[in-house]
Image (cartoon, rainbow, N blue to C red):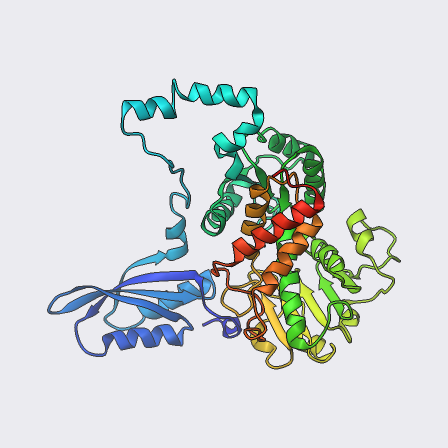
Length: 467
């Protein structure tokens, strides 16, 4: 096992299935499982596929910490005497083969009369009705329940500028989440351009089909320009999830984390590390919610007004203070990291105020491993599903779009995002609130309806709801 693996938790995202032939005698399976455990793997399901007098075939699921770690586990099993490895399957790759989404008809066509209504000649009546009254497109087509998931592949997950083809599996996954959690029909749109105006033009030309657009994995600062131009141009919701989805869930989690820590958002000193799209959106939403003391750091330290050159986005969040991340954290109540792995140390946490809140959200490796924190913090959260308190955007965007589509909102306002965050926070009651339970589960069926209702109410108050 590699030395660095000790601090990491095996994850299903690096899971393999080993198909093995073992001698049919006592103790052979135990030898295999011992080899897997010694190599740092977590055992999952074990199936008996075949058995004869002298041998048996088993399938064993194993979670690892990385691709390299999975290979080490396989090699450890190969070293067990008398064991034959017949097949190694990467379960994540298997899940993605041939794509993860498809088009499914809502009505069946089994007779000539049904064909005549669904397609020609009957469909001509529908087209004529829409031509006479374009608003009917919302009622008579998929548009009223459809979202285009738009990316240019320039900032995919933590992988960087890997292109639109490599972004497609991520956008497919996003479409699955829209459907499962909010029953919204979403489709990936991976554009072969990274020119701001070309992206805006391409998305604008898709307006007849989609009732809203979710921008995804577009690098800063271009993402700000694309979002602002599309919002000015299109009369439908445009939502950059990397910005606003992240900000919504962070605010929801911070509201509850401060309850656990006995702190208030208004009085707390908050340090945000990372001044990209997510970091800036988090700061803006925290301010709208009432936070008054926020310092943001990038790789050069605190973003100070004293810096000679700052982008417009950084100018808006700059503070008088200057210095390093270490200096910013001294006495701080909360750390929110949307940056890079291992940037936070135990010593830096110890310099914070009593009962600090730490959100280490870099993925797949957080700013500090939760195992290193121990009882030094009141609450720790990450972006990973294998730790408690996962800050996951799926708590936000399905409900935000469900609410926006239901009231045919002409856009998504900051107040709608604030309402979404408060709705998520309120789903964790005071009797359930705990250091390891500050946000509801992503599988909590109350989340999307609660967020949708809050968003719809806020849209009506802001005057952007057409229904």
